[in-house]
Each structure stands twice: as structure tokens, then as C-alpha cells.
Length: 428
Image 1 (spheres, rainbow, N blue to C red):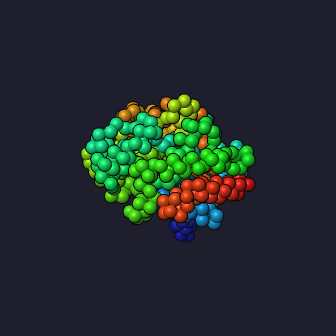
Image 2: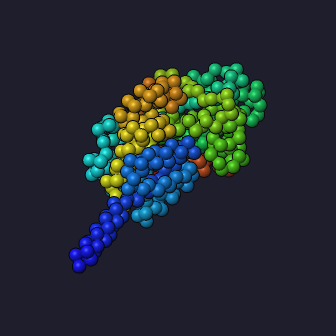
Image 3: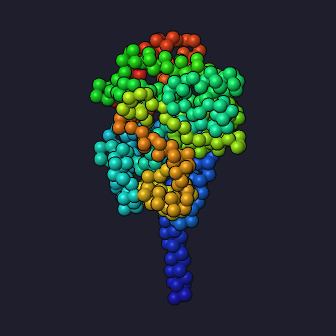
């Protein structure tokens, strides 16, 4: 009898133990966008996390940039978003106007070392007192040039806007019709033209108080005229020419790989994937930043490069916070991610990566950030300027110019009118 009771107790204990182990298993989902380099280092970091916390399983959901936002929008609307997400700063007005669109990270501060981040950086991602994401790094668009292509042109990297524009004719005559000093996608073109307008007029592009653009009709015509001049001067390809190469990522297109497109205006935090795809021995080097005489502000678009956020629908906020802390603040996570998402803001990461020689001032990502920080950049960029609908509208308007569907004046009027409608709806 005693033996039977003992057997029953042992069996019950085993069942309870198995149930307890099953309950301890936590399944998380993490999503991000990027190129293959980012995918590989993040997957490595997740493997290291699982070694440290074998009861926490992380399912990786990664894509390229195209389509990522629309996918995430559907997930958030249906409360099926991942537990941990790489997010964009300009998505805060879209998903979290009141601060409730993402999980408040202040609630999990015991599992997330917020002391590694400067308060001013966390303030950028705080809405109504709720921390919606941890900024991974800060970034700005600057110029990078293919050293081999520019050497063949015989030109020095442009210090002024006039030098940039005049380079187009030299490239065309000396290197050939298919060679351009720079290649810009439409969102980068918008940022570059805003930089010029900020330098000239020292004014914001968006008037948040009145929920509309701040530029006059005349200024919009000037902005689109500058775009047309750059295309006509062979500084960069038109959207029509660019579209002829298909819909793959720009850094995967043959003219970029071969060096026919001689440079770009790009986030310092993402420049590695552009440089890695060049045909060796070509590499990207940081160029000077063109400034208008007397300009008080460079018109840089400074923002958090990306954030890591926790989904508001998560059932595992503590474990999600542990994952974010591991990626940004732990030795293993820092080693794995390196500079793939830019120069980190985490004080622990900066200390570790400088000591190991990963952060070097001559590195393009680091030197690009240092250059941006050295330029006058007091004027803040409104997140509404980077609203996806505004960016998409701008791309459509550029196409209307390049395909001969609208004159510059017509395009400027259309963008101003439609843009104001988007801003008004977005700021309601």
C-alpha cells in the first residue's frame, strides 16, 4: 500500500514538474526590417539570448523595408503585433498619438536598464509621459561618395550646392551618359531639398500649430524647380530612369554595384549595406556637406535611427523588456549587433565597442554622425514631415514631373494642397 502511494506521489510530482516547466516556457515574436547584414547579426543575437534564457523562445519576423509598415499596421489594428518590434520615430503620431499605442516601457524599468540612455534621447520617444520605445541610435542623412567613380571623374567631392550641380555635366561628358554623381530615392530627395530650403530661409517645413506646411506657394515652386534642375543637369537620375531598373533595393541595382551611380545622400546608420554591395576595391567615403553662404542651420534631418518597442498587446512584457535590454545593453548583444543599426546610444554599448575597436572615428557610420553633429542643427524636424503619406505623395509628384504629366508649378501647387490635407487629418 505504501509503495503504491509513493508511486502515485512520484508520478504526481513528475506531472506537476512537467506542467511547471511547460508554464515557464515563454514564446516571443520579434520583428524588424533591414538588409541581409542586419538580419544575420540580429539572428545571432537572438541565439545568444536563448542560450542565456533557454526558457524564452523568440520567433524572428524580418523583412526588407518595402511593405513592412503596411504589414505592421495590419497587425497592430488586429492586436496581433509582435511582442518586440523595431519601430520608426515617425510612426509615433500614426500609432500612438496619446502614448497608448505601444507598451509603456517605464512599467518594465526593473528589467530594462534605462540609465544607459540620456534623458533627452528618451524624451524623443516619450508620448504623454509614456516611453513608447528605446532609441537604438541617432542618425542624419549626409553625403557618401564612391571613391573609385569620383576619382575617375577627376573632381573633388562637392563643398557647395553649385559644385554638386556642376558635377553632373562632368560625369556625363567624361564618364558617360549612364554615370551620375549621386542617386537618391524620393524620400531622400525630399530631405535634401528641405535641407537647401532650411539653409536659405531658416524656417520649418511644417507648421504644427496651424496643421499645415509652412512654405509659401513661391517656395514650393522653388523647391521643385531645384529638383528639376538637378535632374536636367545630370546630377541624379529621374524617377523614370530609376524605375527602369525594377523594384529591388537601390543598393542591389547593377548601376550602384558597378559604380555608375557615384554616391548617395543617406542615413549614416545604414550606410554599411550600401558600401558592402560595391564592386571592390570601391568603397564609400564621407563627403563634405554643402552649405549656403550665411546659413544658420544645415537643415539636417536628425532623428532616432530606429527604436525597439513592446507591443501593447503583449502577454509577456517582462520577458520582452529582458530581450530589449539584452540586445542593447548586454555584452553578448552589443557584440552581436555592433554598428549594424548605427552608433548606439547605450552608454554601455559605446564603452564596450570603443574598447574593442569596433567604434572607430574613421568608420563611415561614425564619421558621418560626427560630421552631422558638427554642423549647425538646432532646428528640429517635425515627425509629420516624415509621415509615410507625405513621403508617398512626394514620390508621386516627382513622377508626374519626370513623366511630363505636370509642370513644376502645377506639381508644386498639387503637393502643397494635398499635403496640407494629409497634415490636417494626421494632426486631428
